[in-house]
Image 1: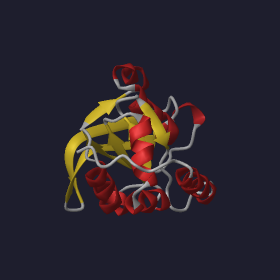
Image 2 (image 1 turned 60 degrees about the vertical axis):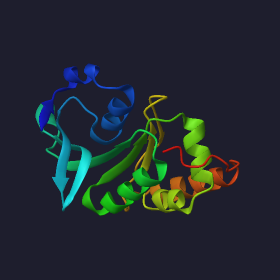
Image 3 (image 1 turned 30 degrees about the vertical axis):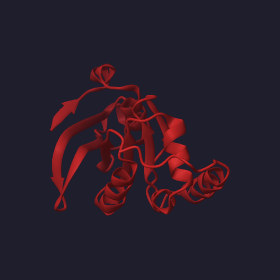
Length: 165
Protein backbone atom coordinates (compact mmCIF):
# COMPACT_ATOMS: atom_id res chain seq x y z
CA UNK A 1 0.00 0.00 0.00
CA UNK A 2 1.12 3.55 -0.69
CA UNK A 3 1.00 6.14 2.10
CA UNK A 4 -0.14 9.67 1.16
CA UNK A 5 0.17 12.94 3.02
CA UNK A 6 -2.17 15.87 2.40
CA UNK A 7 0.19 17.56 -0.10
CA UNK A 8 0.44 14.32 -2.10
CA UNK A 9 -3.31 14.39 -2.86
CA UNK A 10 -2.93 16.78 -5.81
CA UNK A 11 -1.84 13.87 -8.03
CA UNK A 12 -5.13 12.01 -7.46
CA UNK A 13 -8.29 12.34 -9.55
CA UNK A 14 -10.84 14.84 -8.22
CA UNK A 15 -13.44 12.15 -7.44
CA UNK A 16 -10.91 10.25 -5.32
CA UNK A 17 -9.85 13.41 -3.48
CA UNK A 18 -13.56 14.08 -2.80
CA UNK A 19 -14.00 10.59 -1.30
CA UNK A 20 -10.91 11.10 0.85
CA UNK A 21 -12.07 14.56 1.98
CA UNK A 22 -15.51 13.20 2.86
CA UNK A 23 -14.36 10.22 4.91
CA UNK A 24 -10.77 11.00 5.91
CA UNK A 25 -10.51 14.81 5.76
CA UNK A 26 -8.10 16.80 7.82
CA UNK A 27 -4.45 17.80 7.96
CA UNK A 28 -3.67 15.28 10.70
CA UNK A 29 -4.58 12.15 8.78
CA UNK A 30 -2.49 9.43 7.20
CA UNK A 31 -3.91 7.59 4.25
CA UNK A 32 -2.82 4.25 2.75
CA UNK A 33 -4.03 3.33 -0.73
CA UNK A 34 -3.67 -0.15 -2.24
CA UNK A 35 -4.74 -1.51 -5.61
CA UNK A 36 -5.93 -5.08 -6.21
CA UNK A 37 -5.76 -6.02 -2.53
CA UNK A 38 -7.33 -9.16 -1.03
CA UNK A 39 -9.88 -8.43 1.72
CA UNK A 40 -12.05 -11.11 3.31
CA UNK A 41 -11.45 -13.56 0.46
CA UNK A 42 -12.25 -10.99 -2.26
CA UNK A 43 -9.94 -8.97 -4.45
CA UNK A 44 -10.87 -5.30 -4.27
CA UNK A 45 -9.83 -2.79 -6.92
CA UNK A 46 -8.95 -0.03 -4.46
CA UNK A 47 -8.57 -0.21 -0.68
CA UNK A 48 -8.11 3.00 1.28
CA UNK A 49 -7.31 3.10 4.99
CA UNK A 50 -7.11 6.34 6.92
CA UNK A 51 -6.74 7.42 10.53
CA UNK A 52 -6.42 10.68 12.44
CA UNK A 53 -2.88 10.74 13.80
CA UNK A 54 -3.63 12.89 16.85
CA UNK A 55 -1.45 15.84 15.80
CA UNK A 56 -2.13 19.49 16.65
CA UNK A 57 -4.22 18.60 19.68
CA UNK A 58 -6.73 16.45 17.80
CA UNK A 59 -7.56 13.14 19.46
CA UNK A 60 -6.31 10.04 17.68
CA UNK A 61 -9.24 8.48 15.83
CA UNK A 62 -10.08 4.97 14.80
CA UNK A 63 -8.99 3.64 11.46
CA UNK A 64 -11.55 3.79 8.63
CA UNK A 65 -11.58 1.63 5.53
CA UNK A 66 -12.99 2.43 2.08
CA UNK A 67 -13.35 0.03 -0.83
CA UNK A 68 -13.79 1.30 -4.39
CA UNK A 69 -14.80 -1.17 -7.10
CA UNK A 70 -13.87 0.12 -10.57
CA UNK A 71 -15.37 -0.85 -13.91
CA UNK A 72 -15.08 0.59 -17.39
CA UNK A 73 -18.76 0.14 -18.26
CA UNK A 74 -20.25 -3.03 -16.72
CA UNK A 75 -22.80 -1.47 -14.37
CA UNK A 76 -24.35 -4.74 -13.25
CA UNK A 77 -20.98 -6.23 -12.32
CA UNK A 78 -19.74 -3.18 -10.40
CA UNK A 79 -22.96 -3.00 -8.37
CA UNK A 80 -22.80 -6.75 -7.62
CA UNK A 81 -19.19 -6.45 -6.46
CA UNK A 82 -19.88 -3.37 -4.35
CA UNK A 83 -22.77 -5.15 -2.61
CA UNK A 84 -20.66 -8.29 -2.00
CA UNK A 85 -17.89 -6.20 -0.47
CA UNK A 86 -20.17 -3.93 1.60
CA UNK A 87 -19.63 -5.90 4.85
CA UNK A 88 -15.83 -5.67 4.43
CA UNK A 89 -15.35 -1.90 4.89
CA UNK A 90 -16.78 1.16 6.57
CA UNK A 91 -17.59 2.68 3.16
CA UNK A 92 -17.93 1.15 -0.32
CA UNK A 93 -18.13 2.87 -3.70
CA UNK A 94 -19.02 1.66 -7.19
CA UNK A 95 -16.98 3.70 -9.72
CA UNK A 96 -17.92 3.46 -13.40
CA UNK A 97 -16.30 5.13 -16.40
CA UNK A 98 -19.60 6.28 -17.90
CA UNK A 99 -21.34 9.67 -17.93
CA UNK A 100 -23.57 10.51 -14.94
CA UNK A 101 -26.69 10.45 -17.13
CA UNK A 102 -26.03 6.88 -18.31
CA UNK A 103 -25.37 5.69 -14.76
CA UNK A 104 -28.52 7.30 -13.31
CA UNK A 105 -30.69 6.08 -16.18
CA UNK A 106 -29.41 2.52 -15.70
CA UNK A 107 -29.92 2.76 -11.94
CA UNK A 108 -33.54 3.84 -12.42
CA UNK A 109 -34.37 0.58 -14.17
CA UNK A 110 -32.53 -1.99 -12.03
CA UNK A 111 -33.33 -3.39 -8.59
CA UNK A 112 -29.62 -4.01 -8.02
CA UNK A 113 -29.06 -0.25 -7.91
CA UNK A 114 -31.82 0.15 -5.33
CA UNK A 115 -30.19 -2.57 -3.20
CA UNK A 116 -26.87 -0.74 -3.41
CA UNK A 117 -28.43 2.57 -2.33
CA UNK A 118 -30.18 0.85 0.57
CA UNK A 119 -26.85 -0.68 1.64
CA UNK A 120 -25.14 2.74 1.67
CA UNK A 121 -22.95 2.14 -1.40
CA UNK A 122 -21.65 5.35 -2.98
CA UNK A 123 -21.73 5.91 -6.75
CA UNK A 124 -18.98 7.60 -8.81
CA UNK A 125 -18.73 8.59 -12.47
CA UNK A 126 -15.02 8.47 -13.29
CA UNK A 127 -15.79 9.75 -16.80
CA UNK A 128 -17.35 12.94 -15.42
CA UNK A 129 -14.95 12.95 -12.44
CA UNK A 130 -17.75 13.27 -9.87
CA UNK A 131 -19.15 11.50 -6.81
CA UNK A 132 -22.85 11.11 -7.69
CA UNK A 133 -23.92 9.75 -4.28
CA UNK A 134 -21.58 9.49 -1.31
CA UNK A 135 -21.28 6.26 0.65
CA UNK A 136 -22.62 5.91 4.18
CA UNK A 137 -21.90 3.54 7.00
CA UNK A 138 -25.05 1.69 8.03
CA UNK A 139 -25.27 3.43 11.38
CA UNK A 140 -24.86 6.97 10.08
CA UNK A 141 -27.61 9.31 11.25
CA UNK A 142 -27.95 10.97 7.81
CA UNK A 143 -27.96 7.68 5.93
CA UNK A 144 -31.71 6.98 6.27
CA UNK A 145 -32.64 10.45 5.00
CA UNK A 146 -30.16 10.31 2.11
CA UNK A 147 -31.31 6.81 1.16
CA UNK A 148 -34.94 7.93 1.01
CA UNK A 149 -34.10 11.00 -1.10
CA UNK A 150 -31.95 8.95 -3.50
CA UNK A 151 -34.62 6.29 -3.99
CA UNK A 152 -37.21 9.01 -4.63
CA UNK A 153 -34.93 10.67 -7.18
CA UNK A 154 -34.40 7.39 -9.04
CA UNK A 155 -38.19 6.99 -9.45
CA UNK A 156 -38.28 10.17 -11.56
CA UNK A 157 -35.48 9.22 -13.93
CA UNK A 158 -36.77 7.43 -17.03
CA UNK A 159 -35.22 3.96 -17.31
CA UNK A 160 -34.01 2.81 -20.66
CA UNK A 161 -30.24 2.46 -20.92
CA UNK A 162 -29.25 -1.18 -20.88
CA UNK A 163 -25.97 -2.30 -19.39
CA UNK A 164 -23.25 -0.78 -21.52
CA UNK A 165 -20.70 -3.51 -20.68
